[in-house]
Length: 301
Image (tube, rainbow, N blue to C red; front, side, top):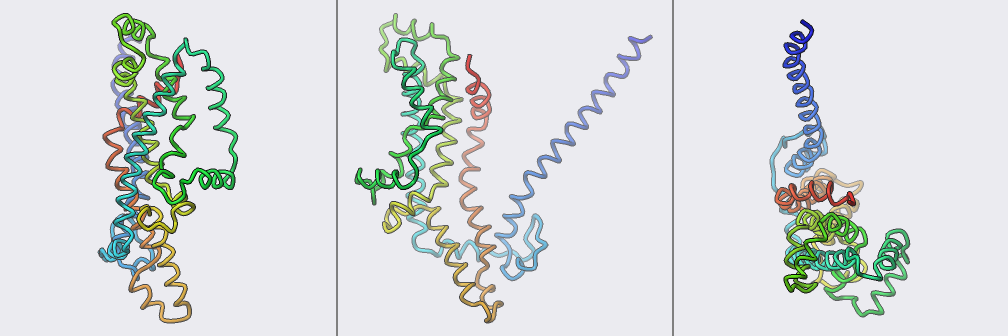
């Protein structure tokens, strides 16, 4: 009798558990999506109406003027091109350098692997600071060049260790069998290691792409006066400063006339959408690899 009661009660308990799980997932999804939808609604709402507040997930007075204000700035197109270029080049070169170094450190026959690993680990905790780094960039004649966007961050210790731990989980017998077939180290790296480390590479690629896309401080420090090397984030930062200055200059005057043109808060929300959407478009293509890379690559066999 006890067995029958347990069997009859199991489907009900399973359904209750499923309801609880789905409820929690839906609640978490709503909490996650609401801030983004709220930012999107404000960016598409009229400036004067936005000041009243109370906007949730849809605009009360739809308008594209906030986006027109952003794209009216002359340097935005150039900044967009440079940001796309530095993201593509920086991501590809960062992946190649990190994966090649990770493959080298994963080789048991590499005698300097302990020293190099220790040296890389130290760079994660010890830094020279901004001023020495600025002097280094200046002495290397990278001021006012595109190289300052790519070369300084070419190798990241964190990226190397993630990829290396993933490679350590690959049976070393595959490399030995490839050597018996006459493959050299470069062939093993290109035809054996890279295809098997796609999850880790996709994870690092996402990290690198987001970092390159969101970076603006290097433009401010090293290429601030080079209009042909400006980046999207730097130009959008200037847009925020410009709109804020315009509003501050009208303090004590007719604020309605100022806010009718543009609201700094609305422009900020529009800028947030502009810089977020490209990454949101790329992420679904890497999401499957990203999850597997973080779970498997973070555990060393």
